[in-house]
Length: 445
Image (cartoon, rainbow, N blue to C red; front, side):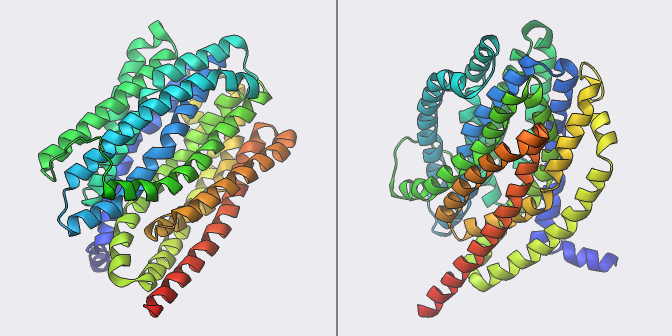
């Protein structure tokens, strides 16, 4: 048995997955604690509703770009390294051009947000004003999160998975320190300050790592050359798709704001618990899969990718099914341990637990969706992913309307799980059709 495990660990994909998962767990562990500290220090109130809503908007905007560049950049840097091109100039161009564009976008976003929110939410005037102030305070995160994702994707391409994986721990340390130091003086504004300072610290650390490893010489640029143009064109479909996918949390929080004070916070706290197993899966295995699959696909062709995806789906299913069952069985003591202290109202614990269970019902299909998502990225089928994203948004709105009328905030979480099942069926079908077309193209050539 020991010999088999040893031989298995010698495989690059397995070794990188295990190591990255360990580093990612260490890196994310501190970050997982942040919502629990916020819950203990601030409880559930209209002020926490305002922060979580504002922070959700910022995450939506940065989430359109950050995950895209982190994943799409991988095959481009691999190609640049193969052709002995200047990686530092390419990465610097992405940083420079994206920085300018995101700065303009953030300003426009803040300008139009307040009048739009007054129409689509049911916050009172004071809460709405607080949301707008918090948006301004957290706006720098849009640029910082995108830039750290560019650097993380670059390091992942070089198979330096440990540094991006552990870096969130430093961000969380700065975050919690700032919140604790200023919570009495600035209230929920200290949370905004903590997130901004924490992400800036993470960005600086990744820049130092790249310099110390001497991987390339980073050269900041604001010119869009031919290669950079192709990158942004490929990424544009995925950016549009991520914009649509990113709307889902905003839609959920907006519709939760119709259900009374504290509903947005209950949904957020349950979502944070759900994101713990999701993050452990996606920041370990999924990061490594994209890097290795990209290399294997261009070396061995579609058939190898088909085999890799089949194996990955089996492994993910075997891992996630028992995790789901265990978390559902022990959901109440976990919720009590996470939130049952400080200013958190005890009567809200059962609400958080029930919402969390509904999220967990979609955990298995959501993780298998992530496998097919990476497989389609390997094929550069970003247009297909964009179409899926728009269908998902429409389905989510419909399910929310139907289920929240009968189940309140629980219905919103249940709608998310049902949408995950739809996504699995859709992406699986699209992937195998795309693979069949690729195989026919190769045969024709």
